Every structure is written in C-alpha cells, then in structure tokens.
Image (cartoon, rainbow, N blue to C red):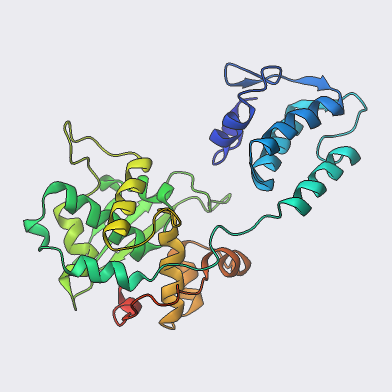
Amino acid sequence: MEFHIWPISGFRVRALLRDGSSFVIKDRVVRCTQNVNTVLVFLSEFRDQGLHYSAINIARSALATFTTLSSGNSISTDPLVSRFFKGIFNTYPPMPRYTEIWNVSLVLYYIRGLPPVRELDLKMLSLKLCFLVAITSAQRLQTLHLLQLDQLTLNNDSAIFRVTKFLKQSRPGNVAFEVLLEAYQKDERLCVLKTLIVALFISYKKPYHRVSKDTLSRWIKIILTNAGIDTLKFKAHSTRAAATSAAVLRQVPVSDIHATAGWAGEKKTFEKFYRKPILAGQWANAHCLRRIL
C-alpha cells in the first residue's frame, strides 16, 4: 500500500511518518503490529513538534490502515488512543487560521496604480496575473497550479479553464472542474482577462519554465506586501477567504460564491473558514467587487 491512496494529503502523510522508520521504508508503508504505548509515543512526538489536531489525526488515520495493535483493537477506535486525541482536542482545539481578513480593496487600489499590462515587465505582469486569478476565482493554489493552456477556452468576455486532475473538492463521479474568469470592462487595470491574454504563469527568470505552486504563493505575497497587507499574518491562501468575504459584503448570493469557489453546498466550511469580517480601519471602497468577484 503506497501513499497515493491519500491523493491530496499523501505528501503530508509521507512527511508525518518519515521519522517513523519502523512504519515507513523508502516511501512504502510496512504492515506491522505495535503496542499501543509505542503508537502513543510516536503520535506524541508530533504534538511536541507543535502540530495541531488535524495533522496528528492524519497520521493516526494513515497508521490505522497498515498497523494493528497487539491488543487487537484498531488505532482508530482504541480507548487509550481516543483519550489521547480527546486531550489534544481539549488542549489545542482546531481553529480557523484567521478570525478576520484583509480588505481586497487595498490591493485593488494598488493594482490600479500599476502601468498598463503591455508596459509591465515580465515579473510584474506575472505577479499581477497570479493575484487577479486568485482573487477573482477564489481558488486554492493547488487549483491555480493546475491551470493549463491546452485546457483553456477563450471567449470575447471570459476564459474557462477545465481542470481534470484530482482536486481537494473532487468527489467520485465529479472530478472535472471549471474555473471561470470573466472580463471586467469597467476598468481594464483590474481585468484578469486582459492580463491573461498577455501571459499565463511562467517564471520571469531564465529558463522561463512553468512555475511551481510555491512560486505562485510567493508572487501573491509580494503583491499583498506591496499593497500594505501584513504577510506575516496573512498567507497566500488568504486570497480565498478575502475574495469570498468581500463578495458577501457586496451582497453576492452565497449560492454564486459556492459555485465560483467550488464548494458543493458546504455551508459550514464556508461560514467557519472563509466568511470573515474585514479588518477594522482598512480603506474600504469596494464598488467594483460584485462584478470582479
């Protein structure tokens, strides 16, 4: 059994279990029987490293697929393991990363002040496109990284990317996903389509290869920093919450927000993780947000 059985979090499973040499050999899990105390010590190491409940729970789920306790119990249901996780939950309860979010208008104001797209150098053009796609689509970086020109349908007033690879929100029978980017004719400086026509995501340094997901993350953080957003507090993924929270502020129907961001009616997820109050005191002039989002 290999790590690809966890198509999205497999890399996290591999990272979590890498130090457990008795469980993992050359990226292949090893079926074994362990004493419950050994498992608890192993999981405790992750807690001591500062990992949160959800990350440690991924390790437990992974171990449960190939490790049997000597007592005959499953790791998922063993009373001692369950008490251990209850203690972690009570001590470090799972919490959303952000309780409030930055104001999209601040960054749009900064972008308006940039030169026209055909006058931008490749670096600034790439940064601008990356941010506009992130904020107008409200997608995860994983999705943005999978956008391919050979899966692009370009129209006069929109661009549609078809994503056929497995995404976090993919479900059996519902793997393909479309990312719609619409033109914003009121202000070409904020139009993702105008920027997209000039370039997609390629490195602005030689040899100009396709960029990684981490590079997209750095690009977004550069734009946020230039616009005055605290990137020590807010990561690149915060564009998802910022975009959807701004859309709610502009009274965009929640059903439209769910469809754009790729949520299949997951209201609880949206309310808990992505609907945030805008930071108090930030400049607020969001007149373009209803159309651009």
